[in-house]
Length: 344
Image (cartoon, rainbow, N blue to C red; front, top):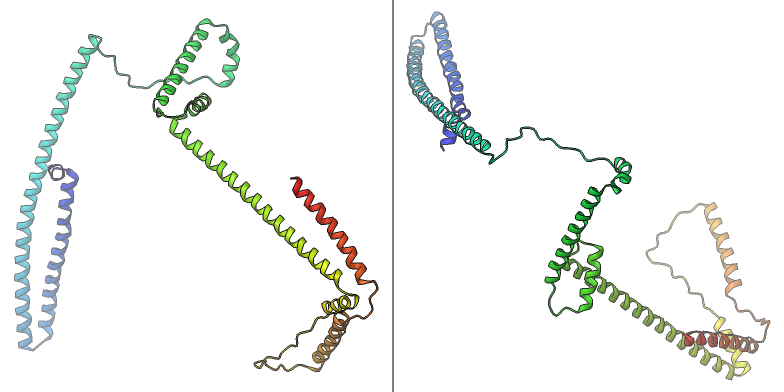
């Protein structure tokens, strides 16, 4: 609360509404003055005594209200300005007090700092940060031959390598301690091998990777089992189909020549389904030219239908001979197919 109260910005915000209030009071005063001038004009031109008396009474009341408002506003403004001055004075007092404390602290800090520097307990504060930029790759390539002959550089490089290997070993030992006692040695050895390749690897990440790998292998194994099962089902279907075809061939061979010809004609005979006109079919008004084209198309369609679907009486080859040749061919294909899958 104190920080908000004795803040110069906050004090200025408190005084800003006074200007708006002053402008409102001035507007009221101007309205009263305007009413007075209008009253004088009405008095000169009007002869109604009752109306003039009312105007006079209203003017007296407005003048009284205006005077009271001015007095109240003036008193309130004076009180507010006194309060504002007290706040500003308090702010100035606190500011001076804080500045004195800062100066005292700064002086004490300077004395203590000089004493510590003289006793070499601390170093002088660097006001500007200076840095040496690293050399580029091109400069390294130019210096590498000379550095390989420099004993100080080689000794530093060996120390750095030893320090790095020590850090890696400590990290590995830390990760090995996190592994449960009942963990198989094969998993521990595999983790060591992976850690030597990736030094930032943790045991938790290693386990997650292993679980993911095992899951993928299981999915692959399931896919292979499903594929083999599907292939087996297809083979069974093909075998069943071949057996049915074999039975049908044998049954055809047992038929007499007349029965076989009758079945052959019956298999070729197909009935055309009559088209039933819909009851809700709307009649279309067609021109003579369009109707003629439709009739020509129907005649062509009927002609093709007769050629394709009517029974042909002439049989070029002996049906029994055709069936026997097909049976031999299918038996040969089935035997080849069966030998192929049994060899797998």
